[in-house]
Image (cartoon, rainbow, N blue to C red; front, side):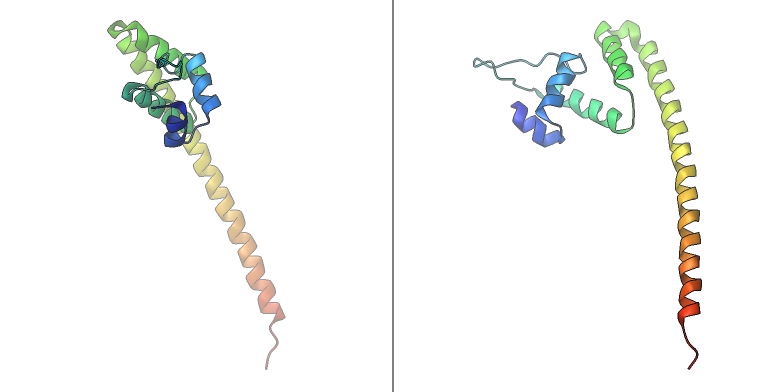
Length: 127
């Protein structure tokens, strides 16, 4: 696949794809005879994984560490697992914070809605 096709498929800019390759988040992408990037299915799996992790809020640095460990082979399986467990803990903490924020917003909205209802009652005139 060309960079244009991959960009559209994953809704990522071509600059982002180049950046991910440059910093090692995805392996070096093969190029065709014309020098144009030719993404493989394996490259796309890495992009899908990175996009998923970034959407969940994982830091680039943690992902670079993970990819580096992966490239070192099976000797790093436990280290990779521990890194993912730590990232999961951080994600859960962020989700809990977001849940508290959502509850606070819902409360504030309910207060405003109640004020509006009271104001509307005041505006009604008896027949």
